[in-house]
Amino acid sequence: MKALSQKRRHPLAAIALLLMGLLLTGGLYAVATTVNEAKASTAEFTASDTQEGKKLFEANCATCHGMGASGTQDGPSLVGVGAAAVDFQVGTGRMPMQMNGPQAYKKPAQFNDTQTHQLAAYVASLGPGPAIPADEYLDEKGDAAKGGELFRTNCAMCHNAAAAGGALTRGKFAPALADVSGKHIYEAMVTGPQNMPVFSDSNITPEGKRDIITFLKQIEANGSPGGADLGALGPVSEGLFVWIAGLGVIIAFTIWLTSRTS
Image 1 (cartoon, rainbow, N blue to C red):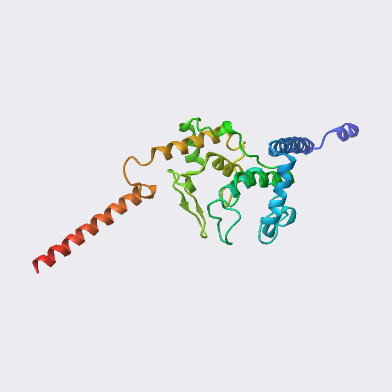
Image 2 (image 1 turned 90 degrees about the vertical axis):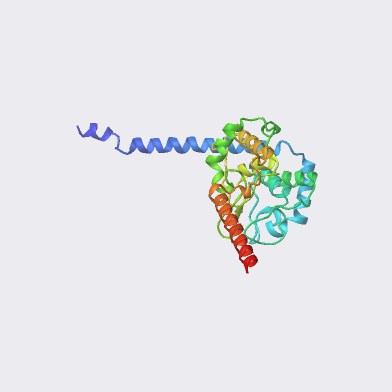
């Protein structure tokens, strides 16, 4: 009986084996994902792109981000952010920043497309990260209805249901999405700039991102058929505006009548 009891498994053995299996599976998945991202991030760049990008980085970006993009107290490390992050930040003019502040503003880009491509190539060579999206996801031919549902579920709480933008805390804001290219919208979703969360392919598939871009471009093209959109802030604020404007007209008319009678 004693020998039999010694051969019995400990009650926690099954749990330990399960945890070991989960850790092993997760580790293998992470390695496979990293390898795929590395290939995607570097496949579209040549050695010349990387070399020229390094020169541009050292001359224009290393002051804040450090040599080798390892980061300083004035700027974060860029190792592993991927080509998409550089293409978004530099392509929209947010980087280089004009001054330190709670948020980088969109402004005219300081680098042309070739230079932006080279900078992205250099940063992509430093570590795996999100790649610049393929053209097939930027054709604006997705399902706008599905895109609208995904947008309202994941994005509208910050960007407004009409993608008109909105205020956040501590001087930050979610920008309006009109006049933003599909490529930059996609890159923002996969890199999470500023306060924006990262929407990986496991959160929103590439096809889902395509649908969101299609939806945004559709509402942008439709404009405001009902007249002035008043910032697309919703019926409460629009109703308040009507009441204030109406009361202002009544008060002005009353003052005009009393001045006439006197």
